[in-house]
Image (cartoon, rainbow over all chains, first blue to last red; front, top):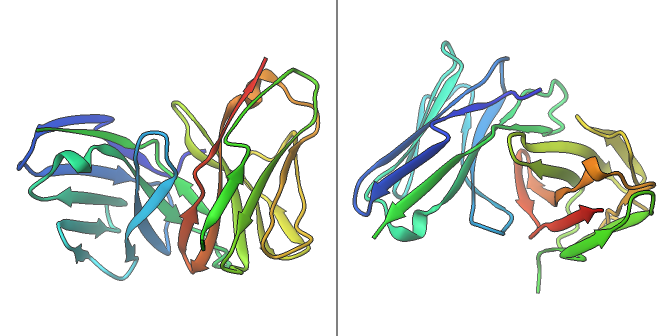
Length: 113
Length: 111
């Protein structure tokens, strides 16, 4: 079963614009992460937000978490062509902190030069 | 170089054959994971391991077997491959809870 549902499935923007993608999940979580996957590559960790946090920043990335709505958003500011990739949210809802992640289906971002 | 590697990167096999996908990490991370990635499903956890000789099932374990005799290796075996196991397989290790480092993936085609 999918814990995370991402929206939109695909997003196309111009270089310099901001990109926002959203993730919704079903059960209470310990934390939520965002990963990036370039075409044909493995996933790369971007940012982690814990359940008691509401917002985090890392460079051009801003993540918010609303546990009451069971949703998170990832904002990439001043996008670049190199940001073209698929972005996945991953939630950890394990009771034993095993770190078993459940991934959303991802948002495919295309940044046009 | 330090990192996580997977082999082979590409594999074509036939239905009914046994296939083993290899995963090796150089960091000595305790936790390792196997996922499959399919269109429309994202990544789904197959098996994970908390340490050498400790493994457990994930969301989609049927048809797969894992072992972990050494901390750095976590092979995944398809005992009798089926077409539905055509997928891209990713291995990951965990440097610290809950972040995971992913390998480059193995693209498996079962004919």
